[in-house]
Length: 119
Length: 141
Image (cartoon, rainbow over all chains, first blue to last red; front, side):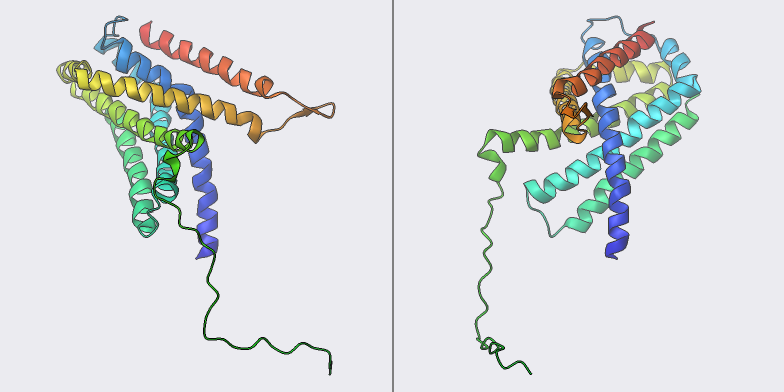
């Protein structure tokens, strides 16, 4: 059991760290554009057709899949340990683990489904 | 047998008490660097929120131009703007703390001397700028 746990931990830590890199490089510009610059009219928002044209490209779909999926595993790792260390909810450890990584897997599935069916 | 062996410790009924000082649940509120640590960890919540909004946007795109227009309209509400602003600063905090960890994670030595931190961190910032411009250019083209 404990050996199983440690081997999982390595994979989960890799996903955490890959998600951290993706989030660090990509998420700020996405929020700046789609969350602030376009809604507030600082920049002319791209048309529906232009976005669809982009999303139809396989490279963009892979990009969006990685952008949505991997950072969720980053969140799962950090959020789990914030609850564990920060708020000291240690008795619910297994429930939190399941909810965090279950959420990340669900998000990955939704991203895969949407990007598969979007064209 | 060894006659100099010490006699076994006598059995006592009372177990010595562990020294385990209780830590308050709010231990991270007292000091700025602890609070900064928790805020850094909480930045991940805003990353997850970003993913959810992005997935909603993709669903709207899939459902057609009217659905996407409704999605855009919802992003213009004051609540959405406030949340986007807070998310932006948290994610910026994540980026900066993440890049500044890189020199600690890899101590590169050149000619027996450790490279200064900024030499390792700087390429990250340069790449970040480049990638951000590239994403902006692709979206706005």
